[in-house]
View 1: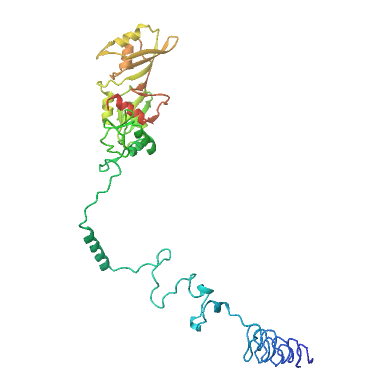
View 2: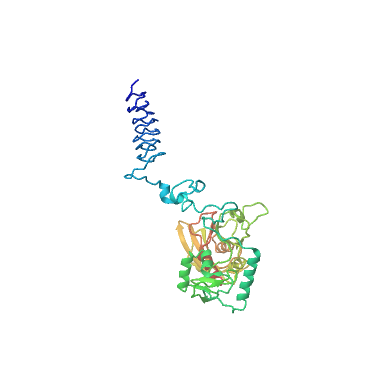
Length: 413
């Protein structure tokens, strides 16, 4: 066995890991775990200036040896005056408390239950009430206290004079809806566009021009006009149908023939047909649920004009137009045309336009036949101000607000 520096030596001066003299457990060397009286191994019990762990009475172990170690003296060692021991991080933050009050986790204020963890929960009982964002809430009040507070507030304010709140616009106490809202719902544009109509003094309510914003109206009772045309603010429907030939001018037919009702998808609202067209006559016919308007449009008093295109065979003399305007004697009286003109001629075939305000049965066919020109095909192209345009046969379209206003103006509504 070696005596000074061997791995398993038992001498007094060695520096190896496992010997008695200088090894790990040596008595005098600089090993890591010696137990002799030497230089201070890692776990020595009495060495001097060893590396890390001496615990004896020697000189300068690194961690737990004698007096002059780096991090901590042992049992009988003395601290080196030139390198005093540094306090631990937790010792720099607060005074060392008994083990039961020592910090549990974290560092600094977090370890003491500070900013990071919040206040400590009370010992026993329920934790303090908190709001949705972690803030503390006041303790709940009893019902008796709430009742007392309410009674006190009533007694405090019951004798004070009532203060009338200012109105935001004239007529705010009236019932109804704001005018611009009613106009927008009726399809006159956005609310901002309807406000501009009011600013431009283009809107009338019951015959008076509106000059203020926010006026309240009753859509079911008040008459509203824009540029002199009545706006249909109620829940009325107005349609124009280009009736094909062979369709009966009724909403329902008990014999099962094709009728006007077959072209209306939504039958929940009852519609009226305004006037009639012969089964073989094509062209525009109006449908609506506005009974008063339908009545006026067909009443002779208002004289709403209807325009027709008729295909006839000539030759056509010049005086036929004058004859139709002067009046032709029919079985049920005279019938006069308001306007007559030749639209197109191809050889002996003529396309003529006839306008009249009467609505008797087969009146156009009977007038031309009495004049000597039987009608081969007849199409109604206009009913009052509503024209057929390029609307295809069998198509149903909804009238615009402007068209409805023109119809109402035509009959004084």
